[in-house]
Image (cartoon, rainbow, N blue to C red):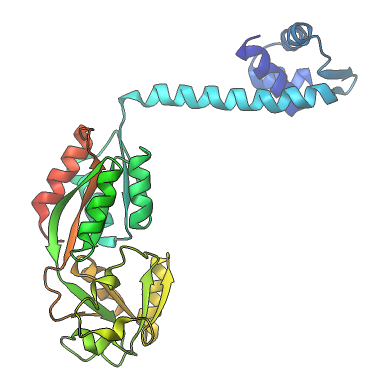
Length: 303
């Protein structure tokens, strides 16, 4: 059995006749009939019923057709992989960040331009750790609170990973005009005790968890603060823009909300409290493309 036999059989089924299959395959009708017949003889099965109007598939043929399709798909994938051997690829996982997305596009324009495949996957910190560990991504970019750093580093170490910091930034409250804190130039943690928040679906390593670790701040026991969660950046943006909901995030994303009229208000005592950096597998060297990206991001220093 060879690929050609499977291909001729599948096309004959799809086209409904050897004549039409021959036109698609750019060969002759007798040749298509001969090759399909050789497959039937090899399998000792009747795969097609022949009649004056063409061919129809038999019950045995239905089963073989399903498997033949999968074989041909996999062969096509292998051939495409062979073609792409000269194309560099880099797979990235990241927490939601328009800022990082912007710099990735600039990195492509300035450093790469062609023959490069960038795969980008947005998710939460826990899933990023899983994806790097499972070798689904080479690099994982995250924001992490310094108060969560010890637990975070222990977790990535257990997975054979390591974290490298690229920059530090303060924590901000993002609000729209409907929020009562909109006119404030700064807020402290006590100001947030009655606010409604919309946060990314990030439980263990949520930036919100940076708040409330001071002994006096017993307000952060979950009784007074209303928090909703989402994995949608567009929903979060529209909710903050058009309602009294606020959002707590680092200054790394400050610029992405300006065009929506959303104000970034610094939270007092949270200066340089958020770390931005990347996760990689400890024992693996970065690819040339990965090294180039890290070098580029390190040179920006504007996160």
